[in-house]
Amino acid sequence: MSDANVKLVQSLYDAFKRGDIATIVNALTPDVDWQVHGDPKDFPTIGRWTGPEGAQDFFRTVAQHLDAAEFSPHEFHANGESVTALGRYRWTVRATGKPAGGEWCHVFNIRNGKVARFREYTNTASFAQALRG
Image (cartoon, rainbow, N blue to C red):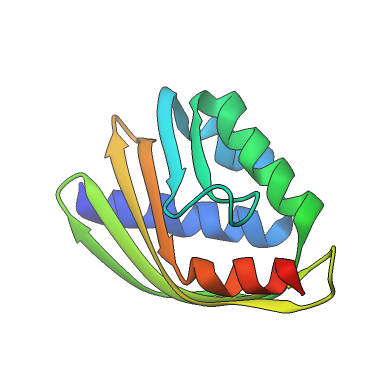
């Protein structure tokens, strides 16, 4: 099952790079718990969303506030129903034109071939600073 889970996660990153958010949303459970850790007061894409509609709101918020300069997942580690991905991204904050980003860790929990839980850990201070300009 771990290989199938890694392939699922990799396909979601490929969809994100193509701007195909519908494919990502369709790969989520009805009760998906989507969270970017940090203080939501620091940046609009930090917080917690529930359900496919919530995840779609998250991606809409990303598109409203950020332009991608680099998005590079480079390591995938499977452990049963969990997949951990490590990578790097660089963004430009639209409101200020300032760069933000760095290394990240994403943890996906898979249930019956769909993402039931997502967690992102990253340098949220970089985003907060870029938003302040």
